Length: 314
Image (tube, rainbow, N blue to C red; front, side):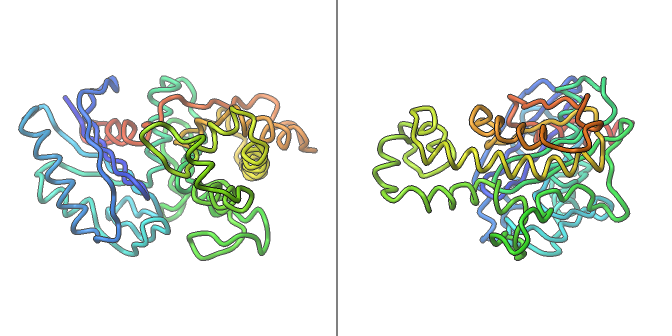
């Protein structure tokens, strides 16, 4: 049996086909282009799924969807997504009608948390907090081996914890959110304040063939010893530590998994993050918690596929 996993992010959307063990069978990726609307995205998703159906036929039994934002998993409704700019849109139902495959939808960080539970920890730890570090900041909880949704499905909105009252504006419209300091858009906005000649910076540090002012470029600069780049990453780690410390104090998880594109810069933000957590006055919740940075930046799509299979075949 094979499942399709879909990870809808603020910038890119990825589809994967995996088996019950999480082995990758096939994948596809394209730009989300949220400005074109949800109907356009659903149409493109259905077209990609049709290709998988042509190749794998009846082996495909389910679709799991992870979407960035506040999701109602019972109704397959994306209630609000700051980074997509959508409110009250349906994705699971329309895609199910177009493909004929049962669809389940969760917040993307919930799906990443499930991926961490299945693939990173082999279901050996029942209590996991996962933070997704990408365009925005999300979090998901697996407690006692089950996804935790809260009273109405919105548990885990860690990106919108207020860590700096009256601080930088977040894409959600509020100020001082964790995401407004540690989301990739916020990191690069801060870098833009410190790096005056952006064009020269990109020419010197961008990855060949990808001449963009982004976190990859910023990481390359940090490796080369660029002072401002290292300062930005240290500030990111400090604020991430503030947010994570609060979550650990409340939830007391056994394991925290960091994933997403920003996590690739671990070498440059982890020291500042760990310094904040090491300075906490109440030490018990921090004594045994394990911090793991996943090398699998596709935990969201893989977790979505595995969760869809779990729900469909149980």
